[in-house]
Amino acid sequence: MNGIISLASITYKEGIRNRALFGIFIMALLAFALTVILTSLFMRDIVRVAASLSLTTIAFSGLLMVIFIGTNLVAKDIDKRTIYMVISRPISRAEYIVGKFLGLCLLIIVSIMFLGIVSSIPVLIAGQTYHNPQSIFSWGIYFTALVFIALKLMLIAGVIIFWSSITSTSFISLILTISVYIIGSTNEVVKGFLDMKMEGVTISPLTSAIIKFVYYIFPNLSAFDLKVQAANGLSVSVGYIAWTLAYWLIYTAIIVSAGALVMERREFP
Amino acid sequence: MPLIEMDSLSKVFTKDFTKKKVCALNSLTLEVLEGEVFGFLGPNGAGKSTTIKLLLHLIRPTSGRLSIDGKAANDKNVRRMIGYLPENPYFYDHLSAKELLWFGGKSCDLNHDSILQRTDTLLQMFDLTDAENRPLRSYSKGMVQRAGLALALIHDPKILILDEPMSGLDPMGRKKVFDLILRLKEEGKTVFFSSHILHDIERLCDRAAILINGSLVRSIHVKKDLPSGKTLEEVFFEEVSRSGGLRE
Image (cartoon, rainbow over all chains, first blue to last red; front, side, top):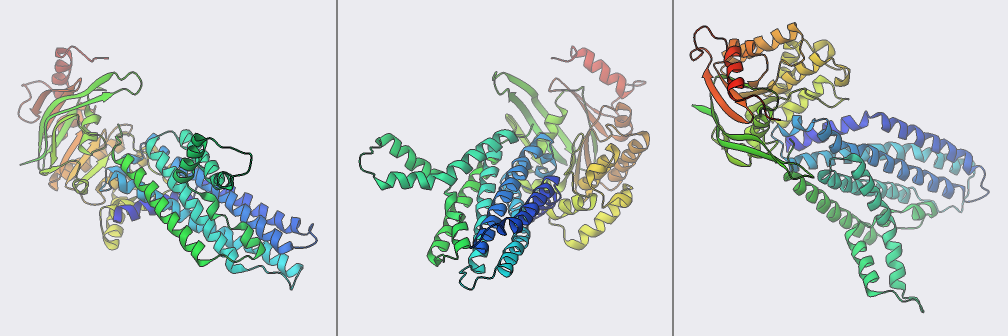
């Protein structure tokens, strides 16, 4: 266990000092500043616009962070042979994968907490400047949406770690992860079309089977998107939160375990 | 008592696209005794680093048996008793030497106080105290090598496996590594190291093995078995020319 903890710790430290992260944070801070300016252009629902823009900024910055830092985590270790330093200690290959994943998760949690706190500033400014007593904005749902963004990013981190265990080329890992992200963000919509059974539209059994296969194999990332609920103050049921958390836990555990299994078979000549 | 035992150890690599097989190590049988300094000699591509990677389970043998202190090399707990310095070590850019040693100690289950105490001692021993909080990417090659040695020693291992520990070091750096190996020997540690600097191996080692084209061609007691008037260097060149030089 100490092996995993120590590896997660240095992965986090290495990640938090990465210059790419500073660039992404600066971009996010500028976007928050822009949110304050942009909201002044709207006549009503200003808090809604501010919340929506802030959450979008966090989701996008987090995605950039996970992809740029995550895809290099394992690939760089293998390319530069830093992995020799880790595997030559009492750390198994599977523990290496788990340690790297947990380090990346810690980086995601800290970064989302930081961005989440900063993002509340434009929302507060919008709320104070254009006070609307009828506003139904809820901080509880806003922070739930932030937690769900963090969960989504951790799931993507699991996907990156899985691909990194298969290929040592960070570019291939990047392309595969982006593909999973695009499919994962749209598969629910596509499955929705399939389930609608519109009149006059026939879908071949093969296409239907492929869509169902993709829906169940790829992660359903849109389930973690609570931006609309947060911006409009719509409540999120406890059942939905519980099911989504269970889905996240099971999917992430499976994908990280699969990565660990693949890594156990690898050699580092 | 042998601490490291290799019995008919072979490693064949298969190239990714051509599927061509390359035999990097051919039926190596070797024993390293507890408390001895063992030198591993051979030209580039002889299989020295392959053997070391097999010892550390970075790669798996194609055939043969390998045990360390009576346990299979694939048992991760075996690596608790090993300190390893890779050839041209490369560490995480943004970590400091202190953080690197914390990782080394923690991953080997050392407690907080022991890690702090060993870190101070080792950083002093390798003249890294002034640079202990600087990121490793700002270190010179010699400093990285010394940080690597400190990492190999942080958990006070029984066995030291050093792959070209003197490569790229200036004379002062070489002297430090030389003195360190002598000190480790006095402490009763087992040191297994590869080097191209034959003079150093002759002065430091109890025994040495010469590996050419993946095969063991000679194993000698450096202090006893060297033919009279001959240096290890001369014996090495004789063996290389007898084996017909290096294969491509």
